[in-house]
Image (cartoon, rainbow, N blue to C red):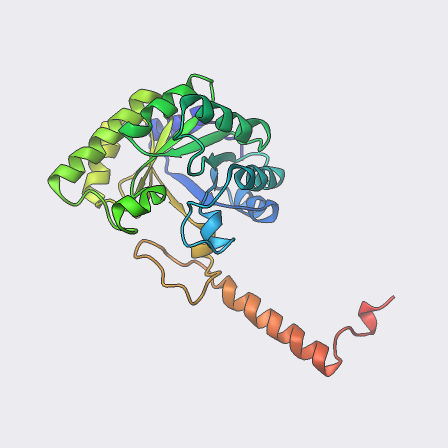
Length: 266
């Protein structure tokens, strides 16, 4: 795989090639995802929920995002690493938005950053884009707005709501985003947005008509086997069961004296 850049992702839309993106939060997982040929690795603020056990993404800090972004970058040399800007890292002022985006690029060594929000976030998107930092937008269901939305609910079902999301899509493109994530919106709305925009759309719960797709790695690997999965998640492996079985076997062998054996001793 060649070194992936933001302009290359734009070219993939023009050529009709599908874009793949997965989350990762550590160096080993990033290395495996890149070796699989996935073009984009998202260091999502979802790390707060799937790795730290938070109820929402809201408690995630800039320091945590810098740490995980740097870890992912250490395991990835070719995929484009996109780092989420967490809650309150860009809402307060444009200067804060620029400074925190710069931290993710400079300290985290990301290749791009991602911001949630449409028209309301367009000022921050423009300010960061003007720094020559590639920026990905995120509209539809935006997890940082979970309290306003009243939960993790599908957005854009009504005509008025759909028009708002369409305006958000136009606004982030105009502000300078090189791509936009569409989360939990009706498939036909995602199709309309994809057809209208010149930048790639990457869907998660937005149907098959987007230019690319993204999933949370922990969800697709079944790392939380007891967790109720959202409708749009497809589980490709059951790593959670494998880990549990391995830990159980380790416990039995320690208790029975079978581990460590002679071959494990100096």
